[in-house]
Image (cartoon, rainbow, N blue to C red; front, side, top):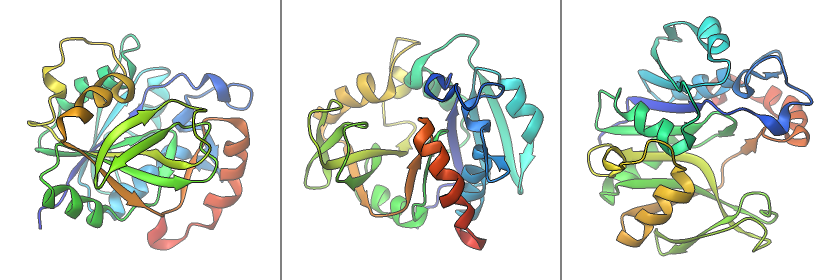
Amino acid sequence: MEKVREAVILAGGLGSRLRSLVSEVPKPMAQVTGKPFLSFLLDYLASSGVQRVILSVGYMHEAIRGCFGPSYNSMELSYVVEEKPLGTGGALKRSLSDARTGSILVLNGDSYLRLDASSFAGFHFSNRSTVTIAVKKMEECDRYGTVHLDGDKVSAFAEKGLTKSGYINAGVYLLDVDRCGLLEVKEDCFSFEKDFLQYRKGEGSVYAFICNDYFIDIGIPEDYMRAQKELSNLKGGDR
């Protein structure tokens, strides 16, 4: 079975909602159990067989490059810097221009999903999907908005606060670089979720992989503090 060897981490956000607790470093560098949150994502990618990671960075990017340098745990690290905010779509589009393989795993730099990457990839390739989104059932999803499904395909996205429970976008994607259409987008600054995915869903090529794995988003102070306890329990291959 084809494997995914390359990944992008979107790590260029300002982290405004977390500024009261984390002000001197970019959000992905927030300390969780004594190490940068970003290191949990890199450990996960290394354990999943990824060999090269493109870090899409912007705000205070020097802190990230200074900490991790050109490699981490046998993985090559490449840095793509936003000189001005491009949104998640613009940042990912620019990062894909640096890609060396045809299939790219994409992670948000402020959330952690302990996903079985092999099963995720198998689902993606067997469906010949252009974009596959990891989704997770949540009983309280006002903060995230929801993803509506038609079988295995994404049929719609609902805004935050419209539904109490449902499937949320867990912030992990698998893209077919040549077929997904992201590199053909004319705009340089746009949202991957609201602009690109909303448009692509109507073409029937955006699939949803339902997972029940551990998930946390450190974007708000309450969940950042919760991560201090929960991520400290990760051991061995779970890291």
